[in-house]
Amino acid sequence: MLNLDAIAGTPQEPGVLQSDDDSVLTQAPHCSVPWVEAILGCSVRAIHHGMRSHPIVRDWAEWEVAPRWSDSWFGCLVQLTEMLVARNGGCHAICQTLMRGPADLAEAALESELMCLSMYDHPHQLYAFLETASQVFVRVLHAHLDAIPTIERGYVNPFGLWATGTVVRTQCDTSALLSPSQYEKWFLPFDMLICESFDYAVIHLLSASLHTVDALLKVERPQAIQVTLDPEPSGPRYEALLPTFGRILTARPGSS
Image (cartoon, rainbow, N blue to C red):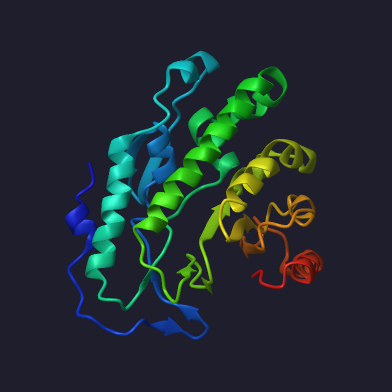
């Protein structure tokens, strides 16, 4: 298990909340840990640059007997959040740790082959898994935020942006495995479930997989889309992305 005392670091002297240009400086509980995957029951192994979860479902019979919730990992996240709050001296806003969205959770717990084939071979089981995973995400983040003191009655998201209310950052890196229609049919409803459970939402995408944007722009939430640029040549040329970025910014002015 994690050494929470070492991870939380030494207590800092009380100070003033720091900012960097137009964003607030943040600290989050150990983002190398795949927290939601671990809480869902995935085993976690240390690797040379962090931690990685291992699948818990190789066929759907295993999911029927899977634990689906780990009190020990959930308790670690809440305790580490409280320790960071107590030790950071008020200089940083404590924010949500890295939490992957429904498609990414499915790929982690099921592996890509079972996830993709289940859209055709086991649709009811896949739907039930996504519903459970999304509900776990929401439950975890509400408890996570409950352990974080508000700042002027609001919270700061992992990108250092403050909002007057609860905030969530989700993601869909696994969209690289999906067609636009598959994403819209199977995974967008659960991204919406997560986003609608909080006051303000932002979703992280990769520039090599922006075919989900049209579906995201059809719904009210998330209010912002954040895109991380994949370097060329693995990602598209930056000039080719400009029309998509223009559509995103027109519909979601707070995106980046």
